[in-house]
Image: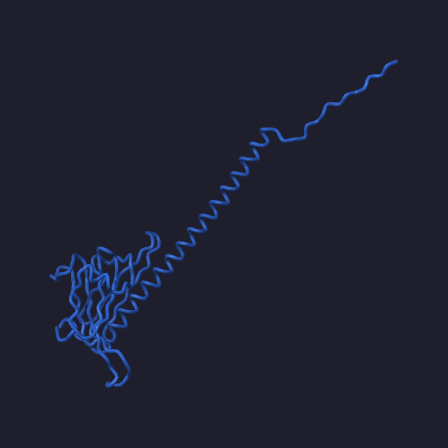
Length: 204
């Protein structure tokens, strides 16, 4: 009697097309999530770096103004709102005759320092020079002044600088983005009793 051999069907153990598609979609999804997290972390780091840089610049400008005013023997502020100034609209310039040097009278040296708020460019620039009248600069001359801070807007428009008597008020912010402003607000006065706008200085 002839026996029949059982023929078993060959089992194909590879992936089906549907399984390959599902695996590809899952891989793409995971990759996109990781890429989104990576890009987000880079943006956060860049924002932190920009805010830190803006903070350093804003504080450096404030320190320069405060130190200059405190050591001033004469001050003049040009660009008060509503007052004729000869400057472009909303621009301001603070000029000081500043005493620098050692503690005794023989070692004191005087120079002229000026801080200019350029409203259209959103910048605060600074210049120091020998004793001579500091005239309002044109745009080309202003470009040669030292840039202290950019992306500057007044905290209380339109003025960065205000004064009450011989006290100078300074209020501005530098903006990295609308959610991360760096605000600077302080008032300062000459420790030497400098008069304001009396025209007695060779700097103005």
